[in-house]
Image (cartoon, rainbow, N blue to C red; front, side):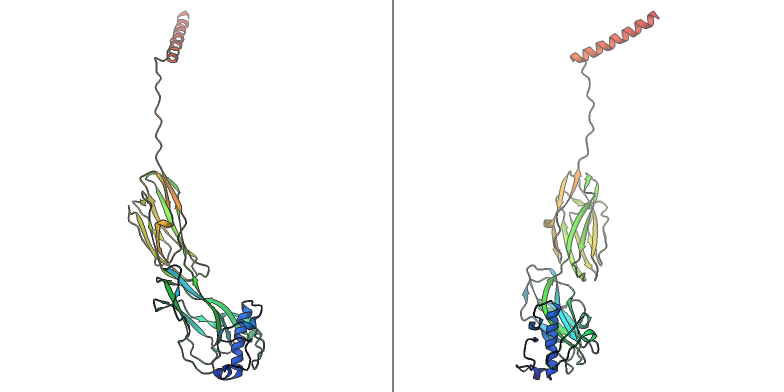
Length: 345
């Protein structure tokens, strides 16, 4: 751990550990660069885990690992790791190649690809002790990085970060602000049309929407247990735009099973199934109908099936009613007058 607020001479043996005072001072500069990157009022007081390589450390060494698993609020979530990294000497030497793994019940699962520590923005590093100022193109490269998401099925998870760069030529970096991120996509559903006559067909569309970092999410799944009275249509017409998507929805079934992925940089994908009902009514399909892994539940969506209208029956005229007798009398009188007129003619 280093901070620009610590003695530049390395009062606690840091100079000896780093080989030279300049090496120790560069680690302090990197910690300060991270503080400035985050907008801290006093960036010199920022602490970071720092390394300035003077020999070849070897590839694949662990730079960070949690001592005990971290409890997750909800199991079966997509979890990623966020980190702030600053790298020095990127203009002339190799970059750190950081790789996160999530420990699911102790088993490491790679979380996305390598993080190249020299991919950030330039940050000036003022002179400190024996380390000269590094400005413009020679400044530190500083950035916030997010690993790929991993579907963690257990109730806790650990973090391990290794460095694939085993070289002592460059590979100088510092990091802080490691955090777990819930990057689970959200499931939504809708019916079209939302109103149909009994026996008609409505298309139920599921949309899986990615989180803002747009990382790949492999292996999510859900089952939609349709409300009583709503079933898969005789022609299910299943379709999906989800990579590796599999939709199980047999004609007449009361549930729909879906598995799939989101590719890297993919904003969303959809699944559609035709449904119907033989009974008039409104069918609300919401989060209580869903069993899922790796997805946030949907809001309620409703489809209504209406009973067919009954044609009106003609009403006979009762001839024995008083007004009926008057009507008949008027008709008879009219015919009589017409006949008399013809006879006179």
